[in-house]
Image (cartoon, rainbow, N blue to C red):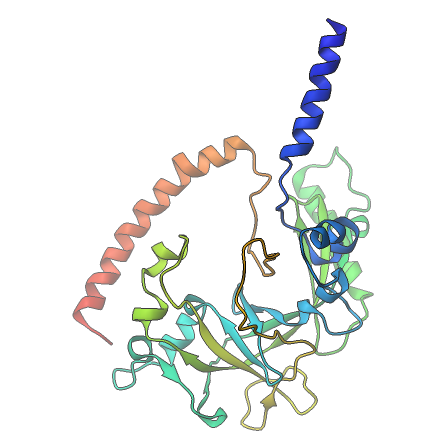
Length: 314
């Protein structure tokens, strides 16, 4: 019986190692120590430093937070970027009128002078990331109440921010990960002069509407194009006719060679959050309680909005 138990244990250990998934979600600062060898074995031709490097241009300098949380990617040395059509939707709509309905007909600037400004729209670059968990959780004990714990965390973060070295045009963010078990500091640069360059008509760029946004394969051209502008020193600046196209540390090159089966694939971007480690009871609550309530409320609210929209194009 003991021998049988040992054999079963060895079988399950081997089985788990065989079925272990290769996918996952990682912060770029950990790729070198956690994933680089595995990623190279899967066909990756660049290094972890090509993805994240604070001393020279790397992939992180070509991938930006667009607006409130979308992902954008720089594709030229003159600040040109792509994002999703639905991410640029608000800017396209704000620039539209009944006479120039860019949502319906699309928009293409034929020169930089025709690119359209967008007050309130910003693009954020991640300059560097640091694990500051030890400093933020210093003095935190298991016996603390939640308000006591949060108060101590807030004080530690405030003290931490005082001593961070950064440029005057840079910002500091400290964010909790894994339900507050880890904290990471982000040095960012926020560019607030972002102009609309081009977008296809909604019939193409937004075909299938938001329902199709969560399906694959997609059946639309879900993109819009913008350009980042900076001051004469390439630093963030408010909108000005005197601003010049931003020169990135890194931009993506586009291959026309296409792809073949088993090519290495990696997604780099800014998910708002992940529920990868959510307890099954919480997943059940979302499915059976929270989502049905939200769907009911939003269905009723959207029906009111839709009624007015169909009566008045403006």
